[in-house]
Image (cartoon, rainbow, N blue to C red; front, top):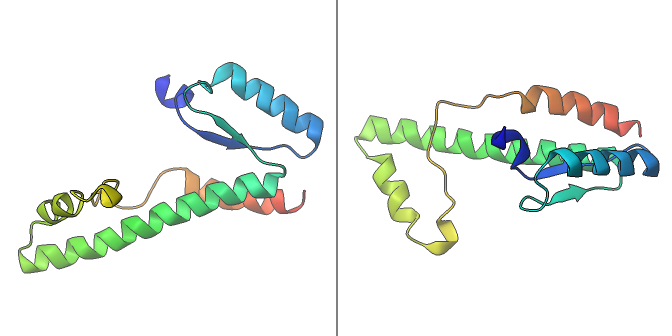
Length: 119
């Protein structure tokens, strides 16, 4: 349950009353005290936020996958390299390569973005 309640969310509504209802509902079911809710003016803004975030993550994962392939071919310990980079405070959030891109966000967010364009 914490993985649902304890996370930052972005939302909107097609009209001010719908946006207010969505915001009220999410404040009731999510931990918005510790993970503030970001309320956008229009659905196209909230859906674009989600698509840009997913695209950013997909780009970083693809980039690290390429470095993974390089490291494997050349006998480089990429984890050691990333840990050395993460010593700099400005780079402490660098992620490690993983099995690839996946999850439910990319397929559904594109459709919601298209829907949001109408409003």
